[in-house]
Image (cartoon, rainbow, N blue to C red; front, top):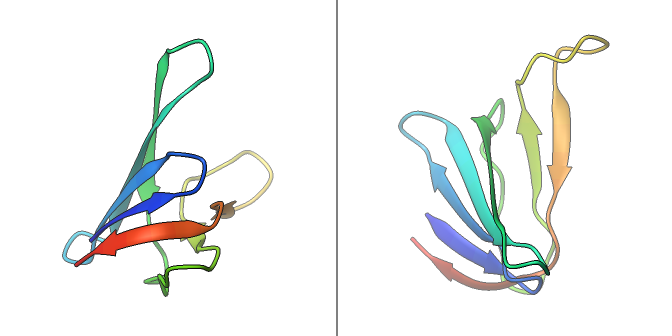
Length: 76
């Protein structure tokens, strides 16, 4: 699944591997990429925020949440 947010970020979700990735362009024109492993498959709806529960290990916790801006388009 691919979805785009109102801030211009493009997210790709792969249910088979439970992985996510994000590509965004900063104001400077620099491309920023992020990715991770999903613990829970998220609900993605146009007009709503998506919450990604990521299993990335941080020193102080076993997971973290990524909150997107509002979804403006979605492709399955």
